[in-house]
Length: 372
Image (tube, rainbow, N blue to C red; front, side, top):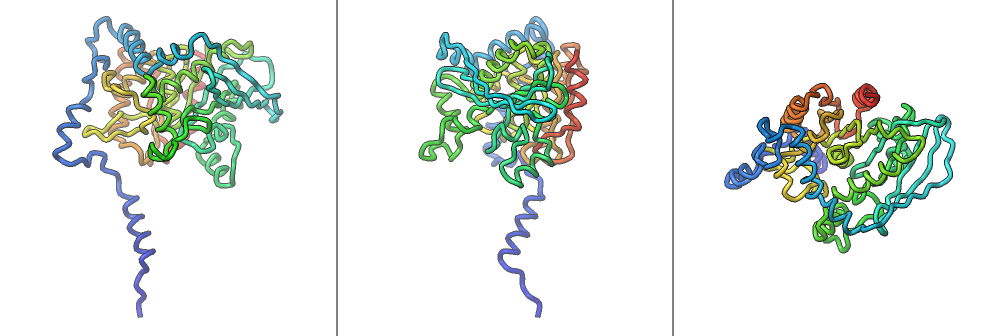
């Protein structure tokens, strides 16, 4: 007698079929779609790049960068920090063979301390700087130095090229792997689960009440790390790489857009339109900035990095983004770089798998542009 499949077997089969089906990122009810389409149409923002922008691309960059800095709350953070001078402490270095590794912490504003790892090649330098913010990762910045917390974590690091700080120092960079505020331990906790059991959202909500954004805080921290590192004798401040995956890629895009000291930016598995044509928002709440559509789209923010080099990498099998909206964003940023006279300094590439780093794509681009 033929045995019928168990409920558990059927459930697993249905789940597998569902997972294999592509997401419909435009599946809002028909009565909602026109409302969302009005808000999320391409290029409507007053700071969105357009060929007839008064004063051309230089004026657009200057005006938009200043407005964006204000919008994400950098001015509010500076005012609330007052005359505070960031402080850094470093542990004694550990010899890792071809490089040294130190634990560090920087107080970027009063009572706010950001932990980081510092990896340095052996020698005197000066070395190019690699700043490597992480995204939503329970292991935080430990992942970027290959410090595994379990066998499964170690396997993920190895298979998904996640030890980017080690990759950087082995290529001659002084590498800093910082904890990303709101996505690492030590941020504002989601007390009583008021914000969906997500500490990153708790951080964002507290920021918004104070005239800040979580993204503004993250960019502020990256800028203070660049200040400190650029003043070191062993750092070549004319060659600065910022690279991150997922939420770390978003930090990369904004930091490069707002801090012109960044030479090369590599956002991984984060570059996309902010929303689908019918309004599906792709990025986590903690990455968003109120009124950002005034600036067009994330592609316009990325375009502020022009004419400095940027490589955007996405995974073909990453379920978080619709490839059509990734390609749409890449085309828009490419147009900005073309207007800036640097079409060869922006590239978008597809990795073969999912939501991860792609060393084989990232490092050839970085090494080709970091010395320019």
